[in-house]
Length: 238
Ligand code: ADP
Ligand code: MG
Image 1 (cartoon, rainbow, N blue to C red):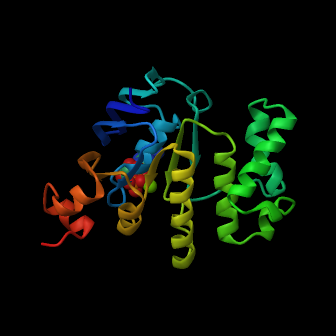
Image 2: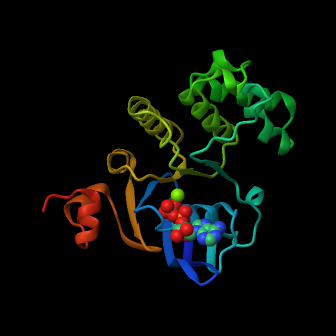
């Protein structure tokens, strides 16, 4: 059984078909990266998986369970987006604990979870600060901490590093890779950075115009692109 299954998912906005029968199966513990040009439907697909946007047709399953019509909270998914949206009036500790509180986790467990992720992300010394007192990279870690504290079945990352400078992006990339290796969770990760895709992915899905053109290991996609578009997009040798 796949951790996440997307079966013939379509999404239209008005007359525009943004997702055209997308199908994809992601295995448990897999790091899947979604790449493709701006506007090809990556975020729409992520929002559909998360339950933030209803699909027009098709089916989404998590660990075999049909969640197509479930709310985001019922899906056991955590998301990290490009804009972190931390609560400005809350401390880092409160920001990380908030989602756990909403899920009625008892106080003791909640505090332990906050300490655990703070340690993992090396933000223990920042727990009493407000978001305004943090650098961009630190805020990004807090946003990630908030997702990690929940220990969901699946993580969705939608261009989480695109607002960071180049140096920080490389550091965070290494850290995400380590986290994945340590926790062994299932991750779907959107990026438009080919190097990021090649370094992080177990498999890469290349999208264009609402369709997945190719799905395979980084090596397979790089060495054996199905068409010129994929070759050019992934920078394959010609
Ligand atoms: P990507 O994340 O790959 O850059 P998106 O999924 O954000 O692409 O967008 C895909 C297409 O769907 C774009 O043409 C975008 O304008 C359109 N789109 C996205 N969200 C909406 C919406 N809420 N209403 C109308 N069109 C939308
Ligand atoms: Mg997007």
